[in-house]
Length: 480
Ligand code: CMP
Image (cartoon, rainbow, N blue to C red):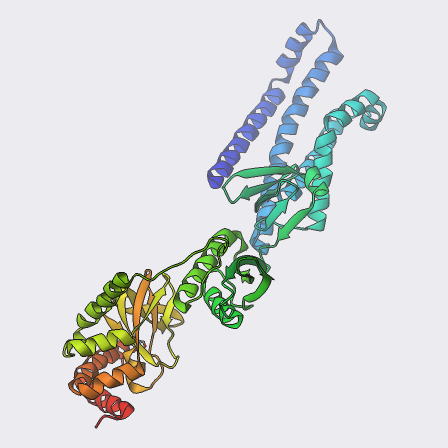
């Protein structure tokens, strides 16, 4: 849109320059006939006919001067943008155009009317001064306020600002000779006069600065502050747009009526997206609370008695047994063994995009996807690359658990995902009674390892690996 506008302007400037040049040529070529027709009109008054001709010339030259100033403006500020990499402020461009045009106009005027005393014309014309002063009072106020804002440079295009009592908040789009243009977060445009802005308090969050935000939450009095602070800090630092340069700060703000009030202070990469990031931070806190058994406080004046519904609990436990018995790996287990495994499994919920397993961490448990979906990712030149997607009933995390080595990949929730976590001790019990399980597990692990290694174009064949993994598992669990 902007490009089309500037193209139209260039065409317009060329057209008026051509028209002015043609006009100039016509006056030059037909000066005699024009003068005699003017004389006829002015009833023989030579001076007045001459002046009319001069005024015509003055207008044409003024048009050419205007075009020349615009061209010079493009050239100088185009070069400035090329060299500095950013556009010069609109105010500076406008001041340049006004000064250059005024100087040129005075030059042309004294060239065409050599006998006119311009200084006297302006200084003696008191009425002219009063009219001009009154008419331009606001404009000049804005203009000079704009100059002082440019000189101070308290903010720049791209900064987030909050102006005045009405708290107009948004991103600065333009600072012109008249006003500051702000685009609010509701995508409205607010124009604030420079003279108003110069008087109002302005809160500036510069674009190239690490700006912080505060988000508030609370917990029950029974929840440990140390645990809460650790869990919330870890959950918040992983959210998108939260700066990695400064770790978030979580602290108790108040011991409130209903619970412990906290605030989390975090720094943003891009402050203009603070609404979305605040929301994401709150979402991450909710999921972290849910996974770690923390609770939000709510008004305790209401007596809230919750009796766990025994029937619902059975139904829930039944769903876990059903899920585990549908996992291929556990197919050989008896019903009792599957129920034991289900009893030992812990359920965790993860938000979309959250890490379930981090590559390189030690691993003491494996997981079964109960609801949702996860992706297995490795780092490819610093960028995450998905090598497998696992759905409901698939398992992961077995490699570190059964070999004692660090986690081989990141596992990330693709959508809200509930996993069943099974620990070392429960698996050992299962292996003790089902030694054959080790063999089928080692085949699956070898296939996965081959999948991992093929991404790096190396690695031995699956059979050799499978044998190696089998003995590693046996050694790790002390199975003969
Ligand atoms: P672990 O190494 O404990 O943690 C990362 C997990 O990602 C790993 O166990 C496997 O469960 C899983 N994983 C690694 N490679 C693959 C693969 N090629 N296909 C499916 N899952 C894999």
